[in-house]
Length: 114
Image (tube, rainbow, N blue to C red):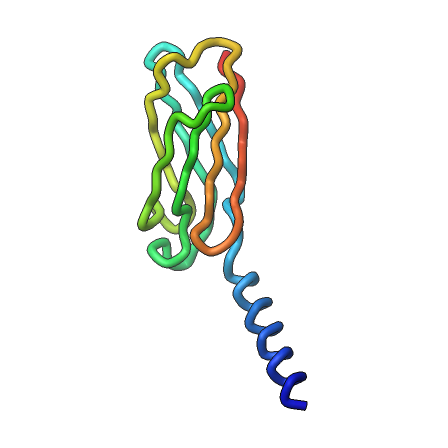
């Protein structure tokens, strides 16, 4: 009986954590070839953006890691906004961004440079 109670408590706790934790919802990227800047908006809603937030971003250019940044909080309760310079990116290149939540999950998005 004790084992069943303990297993039930573990299951309920595990489900509760997953209800409140979620991966980023959407990634929007725009690359400006003239100034080599990428503008990023990562949708990730949170009631407390210093407790539950996008904590890591990785940016790849043609499969090679170019930028890796860690965060201690999110821009605001709805999104993380970022601007980076990607020197050397040219027409036909692929930019991939990986956004990771500090509680649960990640999201990837790709952009083809015009």
